Image 1 (tube, rainbow, N blue to C red):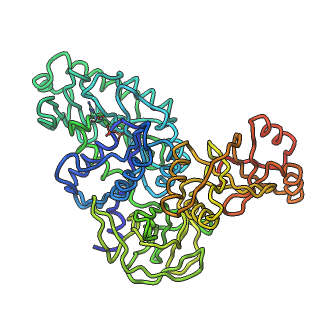
Image 2 (image 1 turned 180 degrees about the horizontal axis):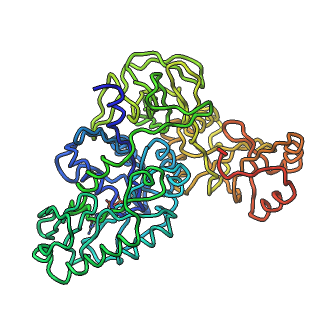
Length: 525
Ligand code: GDP
């Protein structure tokens, strides 16, 4: 196979959903079709259940699971499919954001009864920012749920994207009979007890009187009526607006019953994009380029506390990656060679000799990498699109064991490089502030500092509203602002200026008084 063909056949994507919509179930069924696993139940949900006791036990368990399921690659009908897993718990949303920078498209799972939920909305915002193509899978059609037209309206309104159904349900819940597939024009029948597609009949013309024989008179009439409405309301499906991120094709099914999943996968491999050009600060990098380049979007560290080791996950953006070849670590400006890079096929990790754009490779590492680092075959390329977002929660971190100050600092540095949370150093006092998306991250940090670094930390409250990265075209004004607001100023890990507003009002006032300063809620603008 040529280099070009290898690129064209790759489909790298993530499945996102609100917890419980069916992401794990769908992932597992996709892997079954890909022959990557052979029994149901093999994919562990990486959900953290919020329990009263020992959350961190769950966290450890979760970290074990999530290294195995971080990337699941499999071959399907000449395509190489790479599914990137995302954490289910909302406190780890930043992890999910970063994973979304490494995919070329996304499948969104929605619960037919619950419709669009909070987490889905938030993740879709990231997809929209990046113009990531999305396909929507409406799950749990075997249960009572919302009217499909209402659901589509809800998706359009809540996720700010146009939709185009490519399958259409015949009833729902107890009376669910299957779907009409508008992409391939066949009727897929569902029998609850059989728990799979019982029959798939080619049906080019929905007006064919044969339809009644399969689904009865009333449902046939309703389906024809729905079809007429669909053709009238929604534009004809073409791949271009989907690839541009303007229209989301929609499928209906039931992941648990393996219904509609193969149809989703068959359509997905045909229409979903192969690796797309990636934006670097210097230029746009095309996958077909000969020179190798990639960036680290995830670091998985210290599964064994006695042995400082981690795996850095690289998304390959261009060129061919080869084992035992020298590549440049751009930030350190030094050459590194990897003797045992791993690829992820379903739940196995195996050493690979080569990998192509779209693939994810795991590099064993001992602390060389941090999130966002680029490696290349020589060129200085810095990839964009791994922004930090303003945290939601802030706490001072204090050393609780004076003998272990060094361990604490090292631990904090490394955990932040790994992207566990963000650290800001207060200009005025020099105190360190940790910012997170949720409470659980503070628990993770405290636990890992103790178990991996032997350091003890203590949290002290600080009441902050937002962290804003600031900039201005007028250097004097920027200096003036920093001087006037010195008690609110901090620097992030990269040394960028951050304004820590303790209330929405303070921020508003600052914006009003300093018109030449721009305030950003993410580190990339
Ligand atoms: P996740 O949190 O999005 O990964 O959701 P899971 O895949 O763990 O599913 C959450 C729950 O919904 C589980 O109990 C599943 O068995 C159930 N579930 C998933 N898909 C379906 C479906 O199509 N129909 C029904 N009735 N239940 C489903």
